[in-house]
Length: 427
Image (cartoon, rainbow, N blue to C red; front, side, top):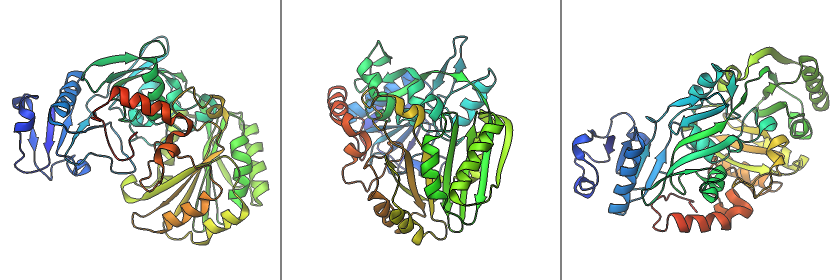
């Protein structure tokens, strides 16, 4: 293990009886990885399950909270003040088997997952960013370009290994620790234990049509809302709108002629010229990084978001566009399809009847984010994607978990009575 302490001269006595200090590398502020977790007193880089067990034991013995960090990022600072961060980036193995099951360490990032599975012609429905951590993405749901066809990333999860608050290590799936397994699929990010390994039922990797079009005028928002959530499952088309520019992008596993026909339909509805670039026969794992320029650096922005079960009114749309200037951005993600063919209570991810997700994105100090969110909220469902945490929510438990909140809270109380796994907006 490698530990980063908050102060130049940390008090090691509180942890010395639990962790063998001779095995640790104490790093002072300014070292790589320190700033990302500066509110916590120690960051432990774990390379094995026994490492994670020791971290949990340390937290229990000292009365501190512990928060896992996979290989990726989070929209908000959830690290515990004066607590411990279990950095799992060293646990990043990816192994597939002949039955189509992939065993993936909790520290792996999507870029490595896609590349490794591609070698055997397999993949999983997941997000777009190469640097996104597979654990956090999965445990909060997992939306991506194949999701309308195959469901959330957590819908492909068939098992997981978890270190619980009492230090025990359990395997969970539909038959073992089934209640915990239910909770991990949509509400498991640091709530009930530290997930160290995930097992997925993979799908054949398709070759897709890569889609991108850009316009400087036209009513793309209304046309997109009427089209994208109801498109065939094999097609996912998302939309970003900035000052003077609208970008339609996504992927389609439909035949090229059918793909083009559907795209001509949406541009006709929007009253714009058909100006969409379609690249044929692109492996799914290779199309996703090409959209990275559409998603600015996570650390340089603030995001608020909400799901929508119905089309926004023209009045709401006009209000959102009124002050859309500079680096402000609206990002629309299509739901529907396989996302919505799972019952709300079948997994902890409760948002199974939504048409789309809307994000308001701008610089960290820009008040427009809150103003735009309030404008859109008039038509929203009140539900929020757990992987897009929002510290400004008045009732986060209801927003993130809806009708599953009470069941999740009961499991939290039973599995973590002393709240070792705690952070802002935890159950």
